[in-house]
Length: 252
Image (tube, rainbow, N blue to C red; front, top):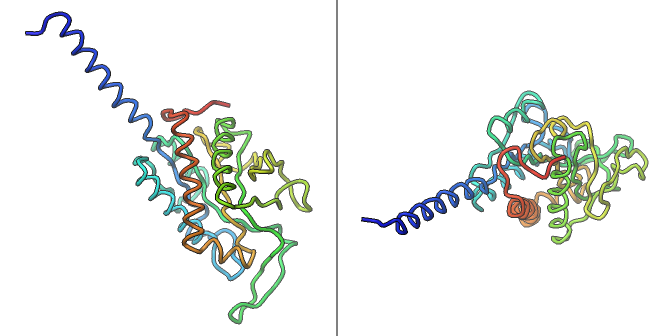
């Protein structure tokens, strides 16, 4: 029979065990990987005529698989909803802690030129290339979203990727503020999925697919893997630092 001291240690041990389980659950960050556009609305068209959605689906699937393999088992993909706000609703209903929208970029229409590929005319622009990370100051978790964007941006730069600058106000046709020129982070306030998400939310443009070389580059398995790895490592860094439950983050 346990004496009072033994009972105290038993209670303490059980409490620590319960806390460990709770902490582990909190740290299993649920990431909503939003695959931009849809099978019925393909988004931008690449220099060789492929819909952006195909690029987004390949990258989003790769990111999701690696998140689950790395221990973030509650992560999930959002594919083919009929409306933009539905993407956010799905993320909320599944209690996502982070929202990552996966996209590939185009350019302003007046930069596009015609070229022939496989006997067909397509639009291209070889002036701009690189990645962009977008955040909304109207979002519920702007400060946390920006912090996540910086972590992923640093990983991109460490992997050798360069930002795109054609959305900046300093470029003809650009309309948006650059919050961090070195890391390629833009302020896009009115993007529906970013301004309506209750969790930290970012949108990543992984490359400019109307650029003829970059279109091919982002499809190379080793390049796609490096891009994916940068995102997953940035998410893991955020998760390790803040490790917050649904609706968490550093706040606005």
